[in-house]
Length: 139
Image (cartoon, rainbow, N blue to C red):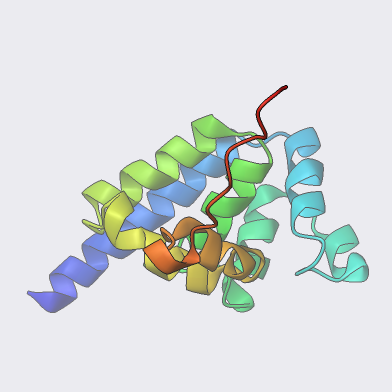
């Protein structure tokens, strides 16, 4: 049962990557590589000439896996590709059965640039809220 489920996930994952690759032009690829310049050294980035090579690089460097799509979600989001982001989210919710609520905490720990926002996203406690004095009355 577990092997069959695993094969199904791998099949769906391969299908997802193929679908994404078909919708990434060379111009898009340059934009996506630019969005991950902190994670891909320039000489490596220059040698990536197709979206499939880009996905392979991300997999080899633990940025992408069948059960870990947060990195490319983040890249698609900052690259303003809601169409690609939507496909990834559909895969995550239908194949992996992970909802947006389940994902929020793990996303913040898996995306290096998002870690700095973790404290901002949580709601402040009553003690942390700064109370402002009312403005002075005009005479």
